View 1 (cartoon, rainbow, N blue to C red):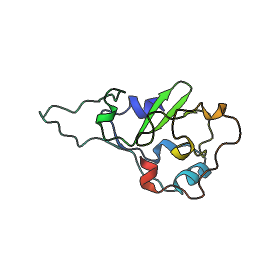
View 2: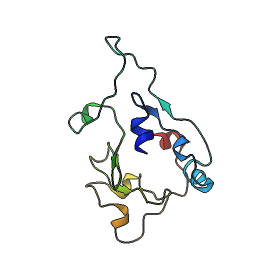
View 3: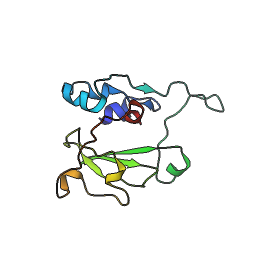
View 4: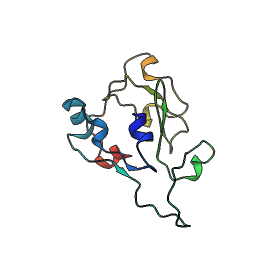
Length: 140
């Protein structure tokens, strides 16, 4: 995941596509995208004010508020932290072994403070939505 999302991209992502799901079982792809497939798109049309080649920027806690972000993802050894920027400044850390159809990206389940990893929470995981997210929502 780190190689695909961070190491193998020159500047950044315009849109993450279903190529992240290559090799996943068909029922996972169907459950996440209704079977739709689309490629990831990199930021390859950037023009800098001084004409220099665009460079990768790292978003930090200090400058995140100054950028137009809807979601943030922090790759951690134990899992991925999913942050819905409009709702909270931290999100749950979702373990790498979490079942992919678990509804962990819906901030209604974790508004407020960050929560422990889903694998460590007591009780059943929140039910997945009965309808798949729109393609636009899945790309953010």
